[in-house]
Image 1: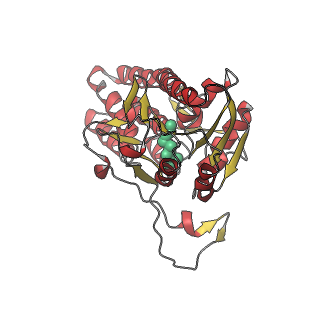
Image 2 (image 1 turned 60 degrees about the vertical axis):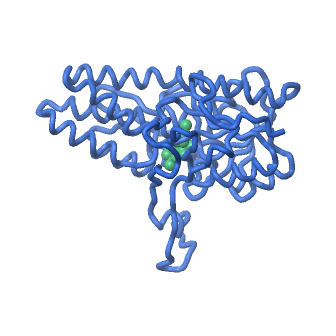
Image 3 (image 1 turned 45 degrees about the horizontal axis):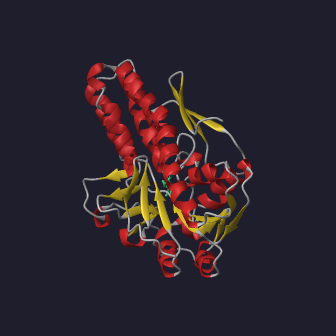
Length: 331
Ligand code: MRU
């Protein structure tokens, strides 16, 4: 299977996530400006994939024949600033930038190492989480709910929350996945459903507003989601709409698992209050499929992420195992 983001002969190649599910196509990005635009448009998105994009962006800047150190650092800052919430983006940039004194070849080698490690760490993180999920329904296939897209499209390959699904599916352990559509950009309906269909996993797409009802009706054994930034205390930023799912899961005593590589953990901030939340264009809310869905000039509140407090999280799971969370057994 093709990687979501890769390096090919001086270009960054991405699966164009703006085109899915209607068309599966790749884009070749030749400049940092094209990369920054692709990140802002969410043609490449998802925290671990953004980490890879950050590292490759620095490699691309360093590979320019006339690039001096100041110029590469300026380009690196442009990439790191393209989106503020997922800490993986600046993590990837910093990792590649640290090799700059050793020359462009060393920078590219480090960026490619970020890509190579991605599948391994996410397989391990999701493997640990799969064990926790299995313990909640030991005798039958599980019924999961997820929000946004934390699959292979959000990483270089494999995925985090959907990685749990792939592990469990391999042993016949998934009855179905409920995929929140994830307003306003529909990463759940467009991308998660596409990945589940490709993998032959039974699924249903539901409006975000139906998630609490699914939990109340006992249709969900566990919630699994990814993360964009995890504070030192375990508070977790993820796609807008995650926090209400966590509230409803706690109310109905359904375990809520966050699955992410350690590169998503930001130990420089004590709690979620310090996480910068990206606010996006009003048009994402006031227009749909080329039509207006609100009066002309309507004021809009469009945060792209929310913060789920750690006391609502059963476990935050990384490649090293359980990182934080209440770990109480809600049921
Ligand atoms: O705005 P997006 O699509 O980049 O947001 C992505 C998410 O919120 C994902 O859930 C998160 O990055 C985890 S991906 C493994």
